[in-house]
Amino acid sequence: MEPTSKLVELREIRKAFGGVVAVDNVSLNLHPGEVVALLGHNGAGKSTLMKMLAGAYPIDSGETLIAGQKVEIRTPAEAQAQGIETIYQTLALADNLDSVANLFLGREKLTPWRTLDDHYMEVEARKVFKRLNKNFTNIRTPVRRLSGGQRQVVAISRALYFNARILIMDEPCAALGPEETAMVGRLVKQLKDDGVGIFLITHDMPDVFGLSDRLAVMKNGRLVGTYRTGDVTEDEVLGMIIAGKQPAGKEQCVR
Ligand SMILES: Nc1ncnc2c1ncn2[C@@H]1O[C@H](COP(=O)(O)OP(=O)(O)O)[C@@H](O)[C@H]1O
Ligand SMILES: [Mg+2]
Image (cartoon, rainbow, N blue to C red; front, side, top):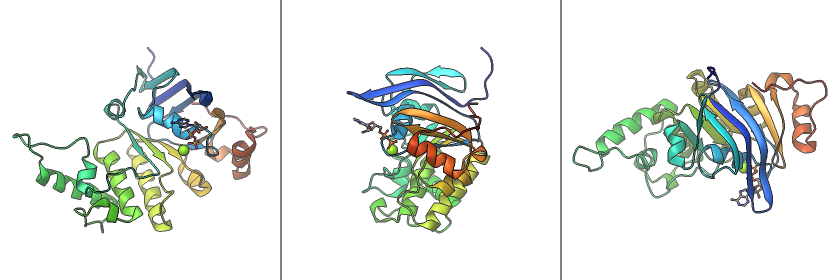
């Protein structure tokens, strides 16, 4: 087999829900240290495509390769074993638990006596939260009482702490204020420098142009096109999203 620099290769992925084809033969790649923005109207199929990579839904047909190896990702645990972490717009956290418990949710550290190693988890949690936000100290408060930005720190910490090499961010700033959005932007850059590959679903054009290396537009389950972000204008991107029209005279970038 030839060596590949591709971290993720999605080949001809298809998914239908009853009569609705949510994802229609979509192929898309991701490289280490690359941010690929995934764009399209509501219902375009972005989340469904990413949920298949994250193990939330099985694919109907197509292939997934991780670092050149064909894999079958049937559950979120199998995705995590491949280094795939997801941050959803809904900030899916266990509201009644504190930040430490949420960081380790489903992957709790045990003592040799098979009890929860609370001390270890708290020390580790403090370190990783601090990296993201120095002012975040109320880590024993139930997360339902935290701000949107603090909740996002907890969600992102799960990806950082467990050494994600592939990160899926599904509208990570949808519930955040401007300062918190800027924090997420800085974090994306930091992870990128660490070689993490990121699929970023967003509707925010400044984020697309400020953070992504390439962009892929979907409409009605189909891929309209994949371009280097610097090669297209905002108007051309909007044209792809709204009309499903490829910009004239622009070369696609399917690496
Ligand atoms: N669990 C589901 N059951 C049935 N239909 C779904 C489900 N999830 C998504 N869909 C449908 O699949 C299509 C794509 O949805 P989605 O992937 O959420 O789009 P996007 O994230 O781009 O807004 C839509 O028509 C949506 O109604
Ligand atoms: Mg969505």
